[in-house]
Amino acid sequence: MPWLLYSLQQETIRQSRMNIASAFPTEQTDKAKSAKEWVSTLAKFREPNTARSYFELLVTAVPFLGLWAAAWAALSVSYWLALALSLPIAAFLLRLFTIQHDCGHGSLFKNRKVSDWVGRALGVVTLTPYDVWRRTHAIHHASHGNLAKRGIGDIVTLTLAEYKALSPLGKLQYRIYRSPFFLFGFVPAYLFFIQQRFPVGLMTTGKYWFSAMLTNLVILCVLGLIYAFGGVAPLLLIFLPSTLLAATAGMWLFYVQHQFEETTWDHNENWDLHDAALYGSSHYILPSWVNWFSANIGIHHIHHLYSRIPFYRLPEVLRENAELAEINRMTIRESFASVRLHLWDETNKRLLSFREARSLAA
Image 1: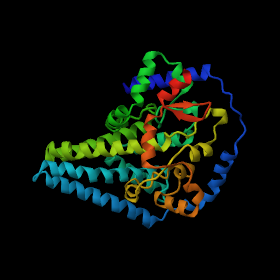
Image 2: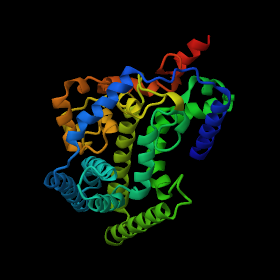
Image 3: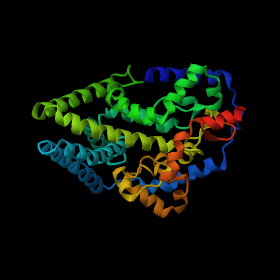
Image 4: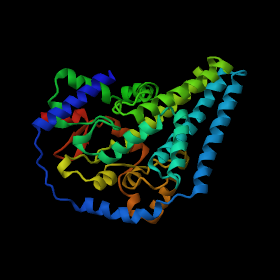
């Protein structure tokens, strides 16, 4: 199914380039100019504090390992207790992934080599080959919101015109793909257990193939050691549920960061990097403890506009720039409504639900 949907996406995009002419003006808007102006303001926040960075890494990795040890010990007392401990393990695993994410942007440490090797080590824990992910994520940052450059590191989003041009089978496939049961039920497991094992989209480049295979080998060795000393129980009751929970939470966060009603998508000739970064990414309002476990990734509009800012300095940006705190604010309640938005309306510049799309066609 994922490969079929990927083929559907590529074919739809090819058709849209051939059949849908752009009728949008090419001059920059004031909104794009203001986004560019913010870049110079944000530059002062880019310098990481090395001691703080190591501290954030330690207060995440040490409890993660401690909880793993506690859950393993709990297996001799109660399988249910061990399973329950997979929830906090997943929370710390999510934070480790977001720290790896900062390493990929070179924002956590001043020394790039330190960032890369910390990222590679964390990639074993998060089941994510670091060099492959860093490259695909860089593509995402460089092309988000560009209708001509969809397909790597994003949620497949079709325009209203593209969807109408699909066959009945194609429409059914897209509906299945965009359903919450598929996106948050199947996709997280597929992404981290299968797709991440191969450098999808970068298969012909030796560097990325080596990164993926070496990460796979180390993961296999770690899982083999767990099995050798603990049997199948820690794998089924600790590793598997904690990984799935963290992957699902990460998938949800990634989804709401760009899938909201007034996000931005544009054709290549009218697309602007800064505009797409600031106005095409959400500011997800979360409880402070959730912000801690997600390493402030909810402040995503600032992160996309200036990805070299360390995660622990993002709240500082908002405190000193109140105007930025008001852009694309999304509460948890509002974020649930985004699940029903599936199609980009190029005329009204907003995401639509399938029901809204039908009403427009009536």
